[in-house]
Length: 510
Image 1 (cartoon, rainbow, N blue to C red):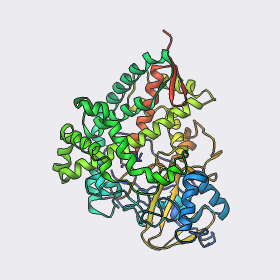
Image 2 (tube, rainbow, N blue to C red):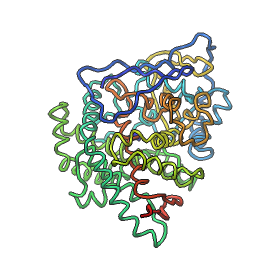
Image 3 (cartoon, one colour):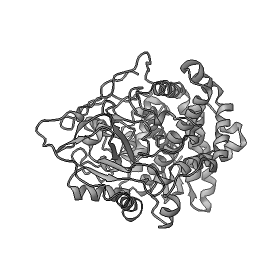
Image 4 (cartoon, rainbow, N blue to C red):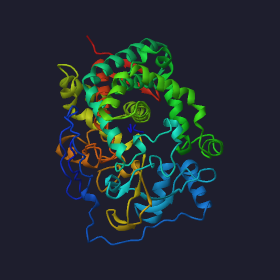
């Protein structure tokens, strides 16, 4: 989602002021990219300081050494949960900008859990200004998993744009996605047909869990479209590739993921220390071998056209495929299906009607782009359920950070932390922010709101480039989700979902 992840052209300056929202250009997935020279750093008008705002000391506290971080960690992961944790502190401090601690922390992590939380659209936008924040090694906060998980190297997600290799790797990622765009639709529709063909015969016997079928589908299309590697050519990967990827991701991220069950065992056994790579070394070696053998064309291009070593190419491809694509989509697709399954407004009928009206000549880039409600449904799901809920950035220098109502002085080296689930419920930007509004992003006003839809380390109206950290696959993520919905409502009139299972599908009447 970044896809994770994660789970990212010439860069245009992104402008999205709070008071006069800018329009956005219409999405074109197969746009022409240019890599001749690095574009300027992203700047946003939300980071300019209106003189009318008062300067305020950042409220909040880190508490006593060791005890403060431990108490915050227990609130975050156990007693309150992540959203309530941030919400209560914002209410207590009467500010959307405040000091607190975030996991991981004491006792076995040698990290500094102190952060400045930024929880409104205006303060959060500073995260995208590369002149203000440094993004090296802060993907999950002050702590990062061992580089052994990524072949003893810092892959692109952990690099700051100021580091030379960031440009090489991100150019490679963007070029790979652009080249794969011609295969994106036929690959995904073919794999979806296979998935549904396997699910349908099982439905008469009872509900069918969609978690494994969805994960197998995501792993297959990510491998084919990103790395040019066909899982079907490796029996082990075809059967177990998604499981190997799940384990590799879980061992890296478990220390930071709230799990609201089996407490205090989770805190004692899962959140107290980092896990060693040897637990998943066999899985990672198998995945590496798969990309090396079956993705030779893409790997070779990384070496010959972008001057990357073979090892750098394969490890970065694996991270993009696993963390950004597979990890991010696994979370995002479950959110899409959950919204469909719990909707009480008749949204399935509206989506079906639009899909069949726009896809008379089939599913293609143009027809998907014209499905305004489908795309809005995807954007609204991202607004309320961002696949990667936390974003971090370390102050590159002393600067003044503004929220809607105050200015705060941030010191060089301090770590900013944005919890996107609350940022995207900013009532000063989004009407009725707690409610899922399927058509929120339809029409001119809706398109203007895309300048404030932050889920990809930048606004939806932004452009990934070598000088920013916006997800290289930002547009591919939203397009793939829209294609998934369009395919669903071409094939079925409706789908009934119970929890994480399909319980029935209704086919079009002859």
